[in-house]
Image 1 (spheres, helix red, strand yellow):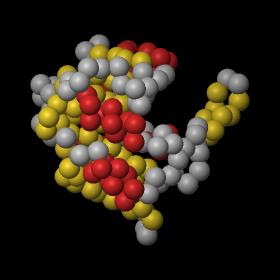
Image 2 (image 1 turned 180 degrees about the vertical axis):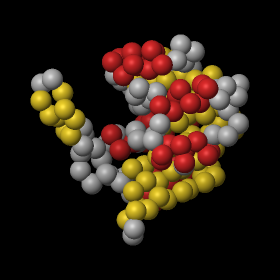
Image 3 (image 1 turned 45 degrees about the horizontal axis):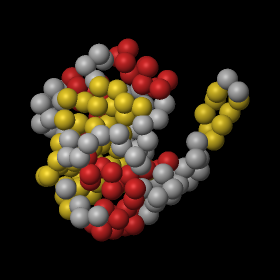
Image 4 (image 1 turned 135 degrees about the vertical axis):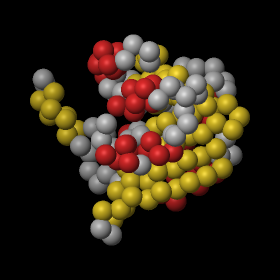
Length: 175
């Protein structure tokens, strides 16, 4: 788990024991594993079965789901928390994901989302050579506006800066 997740995101998830948490874009499960350790009933969703295989080796108590953030494969009002760290930067328009998160959240549930200021797409080495991961810039005020238009109540906004430049926005929004 990196220092950003440890120092920022987890501060919004203090009392998760017994709570149903959906980690969207979970990857290899850095947050999922920690939340499970704290007693949360975690479901980790990712589009990559390879990432989820790595996660499965770390924690056998986490439910794994392969799926798309814009079409969550769950029923209505299932989760107490939906968490999406470093996800929306990969969505052209996060509105569909926000709609889906709202649908799967219980009344009073919370969406915790980070919005990274990523100027250019990162490059990842693969067996076939380097590939760029598609990334999109979302203005912080536009993200907040979309959430409010979808009937979320913004409970907290935290802007993380490096010098004079914002590098990440963390939002806690209540259904």
